[in-house]
Image (cartoon, rainbow over all chains, first blue to last red):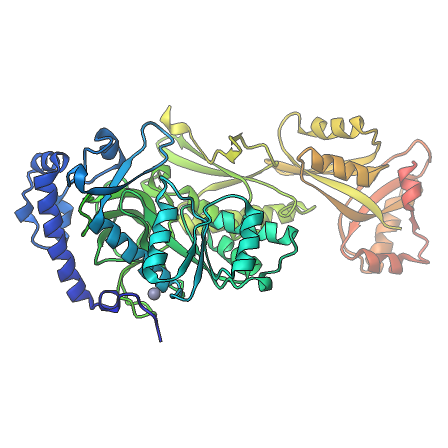
Length: 434
Length: 143
Ligand SMILES: [Zn+2]
């Protein structure tokens, strides 16, 4: 028997769900037009009146919203309610330029808590659980989002926040934490510390981990599940939309359910911005349907994913997106084909145990784009045999070509011959731009 | 009679070979024999040295990809038919040679050849009593 937090909405038949979405979309567009000068101007420039939205597919008539729109209206310019109604402010770190500021009124906080409670239950949590919340508390939405959702659910939340791993392990052990919420890399870090402290996974009561806020892979999931002896599930969210709880993976691991009674999603070609056919990879675009303080129309997340609309084994009817596989900013167009470095990465991951460093070099030979992938030969990949290395080269070439659908040249290079910047490897060298 | 060969992955571009030999020189490692198998892009440098474990560790520390492989080293008279005789014996004993390379030493008038064979344990047994003169580790490292 599946557990739901809000069964009525979570298993709602698609027809009814879409009717609800349309009604909420129309209301949102109306409010944006009347209450946010930025939207009114954009709608007018596009020659759109709120009454033009007659079906869900009419959403394509609306202009996109991008992160710079928030920056241009820094800090509160895109709020649709007076500051007296705002009860919470969060902001993103903003590695370049000004941060983006988001605000919530009381209704928005209720929605957020509802969606986080839903996400926790979707992951298998219930009110008897002890939720170890190691997401950072503060301007970042992770900590407080999980916190309020846990309280709404009625679980016991430990607001431990990040850092001090040894103390975290001690508390997990002594307080009987059953659900771990943190970034996937921090989960692996905790596992390391447990090992050093001679704490076995069986010494803990953990049963499930809710991991997000950074990109990860299936390989990483397998590793976390192995070393911590738990089910590791993916959560999706971004502060511009609401924070964590926009989407949550259920234990069937067939993608993340996006809570569609509150969000309308589209998958578009990041280059042409045209809708992608169902099941194809593209950029995730989200429109908020119930947010009052900071409604978002067609927000370009820059996250690359694929959407699946068939009903899930868990009974939920809400669309599932695949784990985010890259950022649209990283996209390369090679001979007219969209290529993401993450696709090359996942092809390489299937070759060996350890992910080799690689560099993608794009150049132009005559009128044709040429793609060369340099792969560092590490100890694991090396064989004392020319034929063996040539076979490896062919295997990599085949894996990448079957993923990308275009021909590439693969060149094996020595370790550390590829440039590292700030500890991270530089992945792409586009020589066409000169 | 197995001896250890160091194999190093190198790119086929100027300066890579000397990068390896420089590391060995800095660590006082003497090269006894050397061969390169290469393609247009990369090569495998194969080395017999006097301190293989040390060489292997230092090369890895410097970020190179290296491995240790067991090979056989055969001493044969430096005269016509010397190698042919050895190859015939290997063939008769169904020992598959993956690759081989010859080297010389001032210490002996004999010719020395390194063989990488498919199944080295099996080969060692089969070669016993055939008159093939396999060198020991010490003999090779002290050449
Ligand atoms: Zn599901």
